[in-house]
Image (cartoon, rainbow, N blue to C red; front, side, top):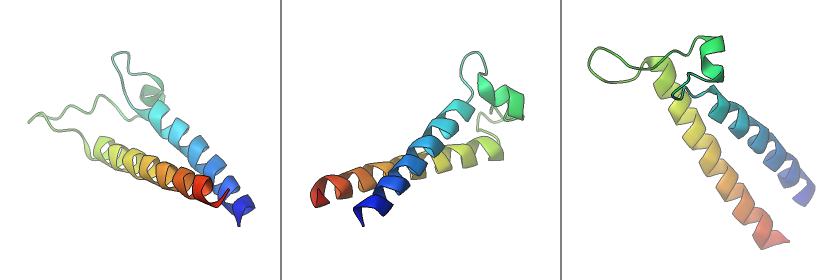
Length: 75
C-alpha cells in the first residue's frame, strides 16, 4: 500500500510542477508557448482555459497534501 501511495505522490508532484509552470506570470512564462494566454477577459475575469488550469492546480495541490498526510500516518 505504501509503495502505491509513493508512486501516486511522485505522479502528483510531477503533475503539480507542470501545472504551476503552465500558469502565466508577469513574463507569460511557459504558458505562452502552449497558448494559455494572459487570462484577462473584457470584464476582468480569466479565460475558460485559465480558470480550468486554476481548478486543476488547486485539485492537484489538495490531493498532494492529503496523500502526504496519509503517507506520514502509515509510516
